[in-house]
Length: 308
Image (cartoon, rainbow, N blue to C red; front, side, top):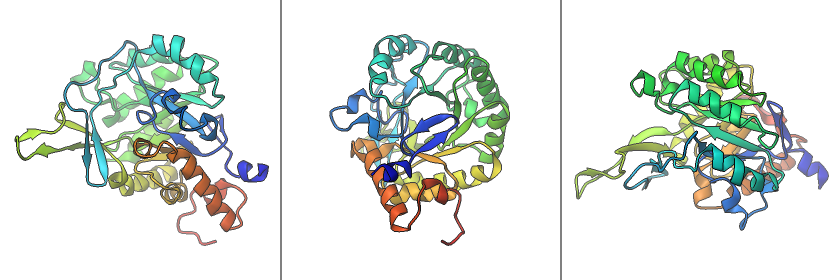
């Protein structure tokens, strides 16, 4: 049994995980919401929902809408703020003895730096930078759509923390490889992708947008082919680990990302319909490896195009 467990153990940018399956930010709350369903120790790492300097109420109106093979969301980074996270949530989460990665979001480069400094704590395993946020100093253009802006954010975080820094990339760009190289050069220890694709739904009866914020992020199985392609591109272009996500519902989905070059994966939208999703995916990867006589998950990373 110990050998079966060891075959899934990975280390991403210094973060040691029992399995390569993490929970994607914004889909697993702060982890505490799931303790009645699963033993949190069974997941590789918990990436908590986006955390900001001050509490945010989020967007008004409808925030979530189902779409064919996916989901649109426009939550607006609702969260209690970093102070409550550090003082109230993190101490409870630390008891689970699972790596805690904090997803951080800001409206300015300076805010990201301050968040990084305040989260440079023993119970924080690493930071994931949400660079899909609007840069208020540059007219609201998302940091993640401009290589220079993305690099500035990563650099600001890098100098304020000794924790592993993971840059989460937006797919809403012309060239994902350019973005990946920019954040790597700025000091990112790993890259996670993809964040949600920008989408919209319209109510044909009221002639109004379904979401209160008009547009939102598309996630779920519909985005998986795009995500796999981007992971494959980035994994060949950078020298840091890649964490793949986007539409992973089953172990087979996760294995596609691993074959494309991801060293670990994150399960997101699947958590909304199956609280055991991350555990089920990890178990499926283990079974896949054992069926093929492989001893470690690393043996399939980046092996697309190669036959056993």
